[in-house]
Length: 482
Image (cartoon, rainbow, N blue to C red; front, side, top):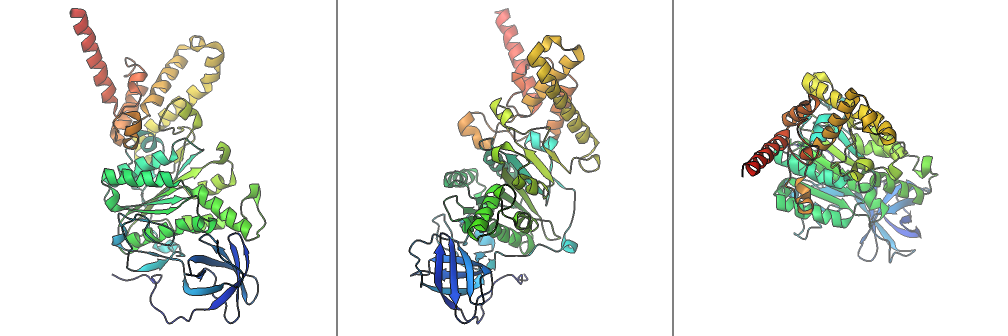
């Protein structure tokens, strides 16, 4: 197996030594009297060299300004700084599977240290001529996503939503479903998220038996902005190894891309850059592109990414959301309104979409059913104001029929999740695409008009509601006979 040029090898590099001349929070200025190290080199300071600093810009011929990746408590002016001679690196290899790491590649799961090859975080995107394009659909087993926003193998999909609408729950469910269905590697990258969520996810994946094919990388929200800003690159570096050297397909889950942008904004402000629109960093588009453009398919394998994106104040025109949209092939928008109605997953069927939803890719049947579902739900949305003012009885017969279909479709597109069984008490369901299409067709053709709306709520395939309806009818007949 050929090693990538990015893999670190032993060199006879002579480390430079400097001293701290200024400290402002996480920003550290270091003076080197002889030779200044290259930018992005990892510098070490402190009594046991426990403080890590990444050089970001030159202030003069002998002065470099860096951002601390660890807390700077105890660091003082005049402290000695050593250049490690290399950029920040993380371990790569098959032995990473089943483990959890921080941004430095150090295990945080209490299972002991790791040895082996390491690779720099700062990799380059695959050149355009080495990329491959395809139209393979990744089936998630989640009805609303497979029907309205199908995912493409080797593409990027975004989960957009405000706080508390179910982004993390949806991501964990997709990990559960896709890892059990496809033979590949799953990498979970937690950027600036709660340590509680990471710990719960680790235990859930271990209990589900999918941890052995998973690598977890965390940059928690209590860590300095420099650390949170680089954790996405750390996870991508590990994913690139499995794609390029191990020749395996990788599912990369990122939770949350907005926290990556937010960390970049903090770093930018600390470094003294003038803010851009809405206070974001002026280099927002470049920094996001450096991360996103490394996610692609090659002849050896594919990295398929599903990314949660927090939407500040539920505003989809926020620069963070707008810049992220441009990199995605599928956008899954989670609606607070649907959450308040108890419709989970809270996927907004009118705002969610995918570039894959064309007849030439998904087939004529899938395309027509998806368009009919969207049309029905859009008409229902237009009628809601009239219903609120005048009541359902004032609508024409065909409009009333549209409302009945739309309400049944909304409830049929809900689904019990495996990862929420302990809260809901309802066993999780994985639904095939054919079952989803059959159920939607039955509702659109009024074959489910005999079923109540509640019968279609939180079920898998439509057969479950029909079977339950038949059992209830038989029970009623039996009671009447008695």
